[in-house]
Length: 313
Ligand SMILES: Nc1nc2c(c(=O)[nH]1)N[C@H]1C(S)=C(S)[C@@H](COP(=O)(O)O)O[C@H]1N2
Ligand SMILES: [Mo]
Image (cartoon, rainbow, N blue to C red):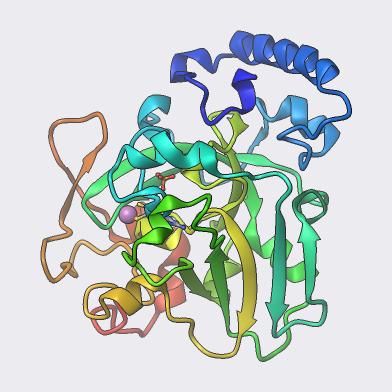
């Protein structure tokens, strides 16, 4: 079933309405054959299973050229599957994303652990074409499919003590061979301040390019925070915790002088070992100027009014 298999060799040009239609037919034929067994997309509402190809366009999308599908799904950072850029595409099919559940805990009125399908049920998916800027100096433009994180968080009624949100990726070295080495202090942890988490630009993604999220891109559920360096956009989330105190992310722990909590894209604050003034858009040769807040300043600059962004890097 090409449609749901880790990108399954699809290219960007394959993801046309006709291709989506053909995949849909194939999917439905295969679905009939698989009756009684668990569909890899059983977490999707029945309607979304066939309409993920054409979600409604959401706000904030860029009209810049999208990075080709093969690059978006073939050049990745997902250290749980190895530190090489090709490792995730090679090994992430070992990850079982169904069944999947997510625990929501900490400072909220309604902590719960929900099966992914129940977590997603109330949310309508939309397309958000966002720039993603990796701290390493490359960038992509990715057509995500997802919904605002804030809509999900509010369902669990955070208390007045909830000042931050912490996220965790699955820890399972059997499925994630990269976790057998102490590259990072596993599981991968990230965090946002509450107002960042509730900001309408911040989404949880379940798909990209009209299809279910390939494992290498963080299936079945990953964060996307487009004005921050890519490492804040944590993949394959199993735990969301409301906290009173600022979480310590895996990267802060690994190298506190190199990776701060905020990690807003900022061309004027160099990484201690390289400049952040320019970036290479994957697929291009000449470098581009990196934009403050990755070009989303109009939306998010006010979140940091009065803060020294050199201190709070
Ligand atoms: N769990 C987890 N999430 C992760 C990472 C990782 O290694 N593990 N890498 C981060 C980094 S450095 C980047 S740039 C983005 C890359 O997302 P993409 O592969 O979908 O483009 O994922 C982020 N999320
Ligand atoms: Mo990154």
